[in-house]
Image (cartoon, rainbow, N blue to C red; front, side, top):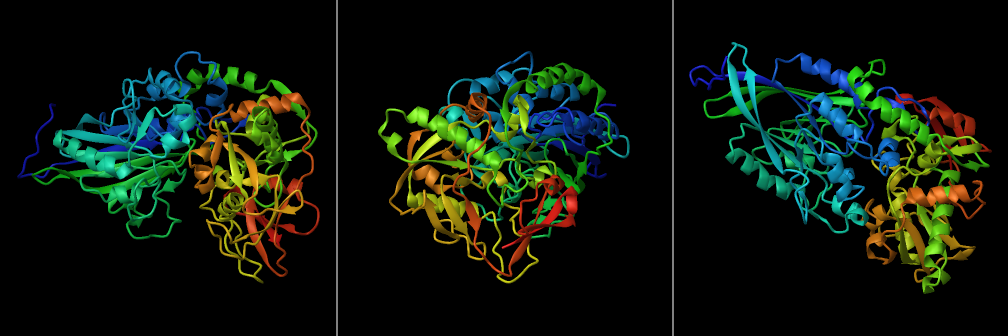
Length: 606
C-alpha cells in the first residue's frame, strides 16, 4: 500500500519508536579487559540483543535506532588498538551490522585528533551528526542535521509518510578539552545557539518531527552561554519534539529523582517534551514510543512512553555482533596480558577519596620523573615539582566494581592501563601558592558540608565525579568538611605545607597535570590562568608505562593530607565491597553493611 496524505476529516495517527544508546565508550562485548573477566550488562553486543527484540515489536519502518555520542573511545579496546588499526573500527562495524539510522558525535570522539576520527568514521553506513562542532579546514566530519523519510502504519491500516529531522549537539568545551590533540582544528559553538539556527532549517525543509541527539546532560533550567549540560533549556526551544540525552552517564526517566521545574522524571519529559538518557557502556537501551496525531496542519506528539530499559545481565550477547568482535577480542586480550613490570605493594582505590592512595602515588611518581626530564636545562628545573592526580576509578556511576584492585606481583599491560584510564597528555604549569589553595578548594567540593557532632550524614557529593577531584602530591594540608567550600580559596583548606614549611601565596612551583585540566576540564580556574610550560607532552599512558618498566613499583612515603580532627563527628560513604579486605588500621573507618546498588557502606569517624 502506498503512503497516503492525512485526511482532515479523519484525524490520522501513527506510532514511531525511537531506540537509543549513548556513551558506549568502545564497550562492545560484556567483558572487563582491565580485570580480564566477564562484565555482564555491558557492551553493545548485549544491548544489541535487546535492541533487536524491541525493534521486532514494531512494523517495518516504524523504528529508528540512534546513538548519542562517545561510542568510539574510552575503553581499553580503543586505547590499546589505537595505534594498531586493522580494518574498520570495531564499534562502527558493529553499529553498521545493527543498522543504526544515525549517530551524534560526543566530546570523546575527538580524543585522538581529527585524522584518527576521520579514519574511524569513514566506513560508517549511517549519517554522523553535530551542529555545533565543525572542523576549520577540510571536509566536514559530520552533518549538522539530517532528514529521514519514514512510512508509518496507522491503526486503520493506512500508511503515512513522515519526514523526521535529526540534529546532533555536543558540549562546546570539546574543542578545549581535546585542544592538545586537535591543534586548534575544531570550531565550537554554543549548543542553544546552534539549535536555534538548525531547528527552523529542518522545519523549513519539511520536517514533520524534530528530535535532538544532545550529547549533554540535564543541566540548570536557566540558559547560560557555553553550557556543557544544556538539555533542559534546549527542550524549551520551539520546534523541538523529543530529545535523546547523554554525556553525564545518568539515566532518564528515573523515578528516584525528584521533580523540579521543567523536569518530570516519572513521565520522562523536559518542558513537556519526551526525553530519554540510556546510561552508559550499554547498560540501558533508551526507548521513546511517540504516538503521533495529525491535526490538519501538521503532526504532533499526542502521547508518549519514555523508558531507559536496563540490559539484563542474563541476556545473551547478539550472536552476529559476538562473532564480528571475536578476532579483536582475542587480539586485545593477548596484548593486554603482556607483562610490563612488577608491583611491590597492593594497589587499590577503594578509599581514594578519603585518604592517601598508592595508586595515585604511582601516577604522581611517573609524572614527576617525566617532568624533571622535560625541564632539564630550563630555569624552571630549580622549582619544586608537584603533581595533580585524580582517582579515575572510585565507584560512582561506574558501579561497585569500578575500582582498582591489583595484588603485589607481576604487572600486565592491562593493569597499568587501569591506573590511568583517559587518553590525556602530560601538561606542566608554573603556579603560585595562591593557585594551589584555589585548586585544592575546588577538589574539596567533592565533600558535603558536615554538621559538627552529627554521626549519621553522607560524606560525598554524588554530583562531583571522582575524576574531578585532584590530590596535589608533594604538599600536605588539612581539610575541614564542616566549613563552606569556596571555589576561590579560603574555605576548607588549612595548614598547607611543602616539605614542612608553610606555603605562602607567592611561592612558586611547577605543577604536573594533564591536557584535560589545561583545557579547563573540571573547572579548575588556575589551570587556565597559570603560565603554561608544556601544553601537550607525551601521552600519560606512555609516561606511566615507562615508569613501571624502569623499576618495580614501590611508592615512597610522602607528605599527606588529612581531615581536620572533629571529635564526635562522623559521616558515611559507600565504596566497593572489595574494600572489606583493605580496611586501614585503627577505628577511623568501620563497615556498616551492604548498601544500594551492590556497594558497601562505611562510617568515617573524624
